Length: 144
Length: 82
Figure 1 (cartoon, helix red, strand yellow):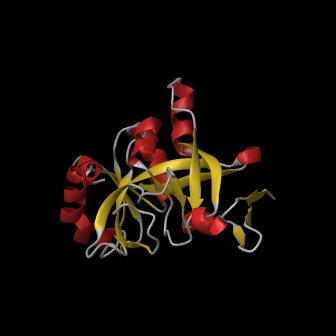
Figure 2 (cartoon, chains in turn cyan, yellow; figure 1 turned 30 degrees about the vertical axis):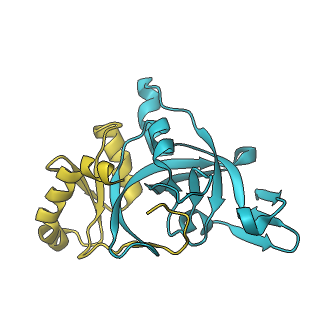
């Protein structure tokens, strides 16, 4: 069972972030590998664990670097929108340290709101995990 | 975001034209659409993606849940720039 423990100087200020990599989905890899088609390797990014996010979010820049194409759309609603916005959905794998992978996630593409991250890990991934947020110790533990 | 949504506009328009008919045929399943063509109907999104990648490739295509109305995904944090 993978366990990721992290300590940061001011957890309340920066939030529970983790280094991960995002790459094309297992299904895309499986379809293209036999054909010898080169796909983008996973890209390392800093991701914020965001329990307020329904779904995992990728920044537009990250999507461009991955060279993947949309496989759908989804309307989203945020605290600052008065009507839903349509976002594209992308099919990806999320690589954690020590070889643990969450495969075939349907993430949306949207710009980050001034936070220094390229990915928000949403509740679609967190449904597989336990997050222990220890504010007084400025540390958190993410367990799959 | 808005620009990328336009990439799939033809597929979205096709789905809206066909939504009621698809609802009567396959409620709760997933439609795979490329351009103005229904590629297939599947039990899961993963299955639709698998077929999409194998038949269409790494090109835009639309996987759409066949439901009466699309419910927005809710984001209650301020981490999105929208």
